[in-house]
Image 1 (spheres, helix red, strand yellow):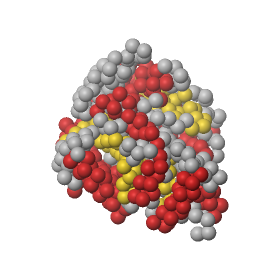
Image 2 (tube, helix red, strand yellow; image 1 turned 45 degrees about the horizontal axis):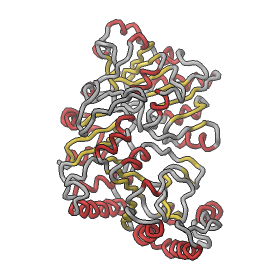
Image 3 (cartoon, rainbow, N blue to C red; image 1 turned 135 degrees about the vertical axis):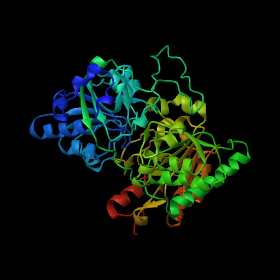
Image 4 (cartoon, rainbow, N blue to C red; image 1 turned 120 degrees about the vertical axis):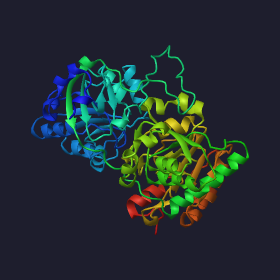
Length: 498
């Protein structure tokens, strides 16, 4: 039964079907939804909207925290429901619609969305749909496995639909810390000085009169798709561990490395799992997604606390964590993404940020988002929030892709998400490039010598030598700088004649 999860009796009469709740949404509306990287998304009402879109003219602008699970982004895109999508996605069907110009995708730093909404720079939602584990006696909403942008989307919306998901463990209650920064220009400092500080409330404080519908669901989150480490990701981890050892010995990092932020995906997750066999103890995490590596480190006795804004786990890790949540609860906290990613806090806490690059160039500019400079992959996510403000900004990637047809290190990236000014450490399975304190010509030498796959090293050396003869503070041959990308597009390999 669900009645014990709706603790404000006046809301009991708001229970209805997903189809009925979906009628509150009209064509042209801006809709907020919970969900951050396949965790805690609303699940039933979006599908009811998909059904409506098949039979009537219905388009919405959708704002979430990050990507949605259960293939919802793809189903909504396929039904033609989405006119506009903000600020992140990771679905192949939606990606195709974005790259064909059918859906307008606004790729944003994840800390920016609600700040712009707060200041009326972008439209606030007409209706917000929030997945909850329960509703408190005050009518406040306890989220499930993510906070993301849910708190602000609920507060800013005219109406709220709550999806009460009985599949989620009630022990999630008490895990969240909901805090709203004050309005600018008179905002005070955010009073968080340690990773495990609690500065807010355990539920989203909303006016219960705005709750227009409650839909009962019982569907789990999607599993994450991370895979175990392979030879290359282990090599990247080994390079990082050796680098961290020298940083600790030199006094540039504390013995526990300081708070870590870890980007999503196979490479970053596998690299951080490599710290299990390192000498570092009492690790702490201040990140966005708490993924498998977080709990592997906790179970290994290496990590003592982790702060994030969602929990997204593989099938092999999911049951272990959520089936024994009490074991982990005192070591975890979930915050809104504007707090987990806030520049003030990233700078204050001294974050070591580890994120994944699609490619980087010989001067340290990083492309995180666009294949070939034009085709959106997923989005910049929170990597920019952390890279610009971290104590140490690290980007990792394998040196080659597509069987060696693609080099992840190129003369010039076709799209820049993180400029050379925000990037300090680059790591591939080949080695590590420490760019701190180096001029562009010095950075290029270190990157080529340490990070490039042997099959591309001679070509990059030849390009760099020729560029240096032409001159410039950042030497380039503009008529050749994009040749590798055009070769790939025209011949299927970055090097002509391969």
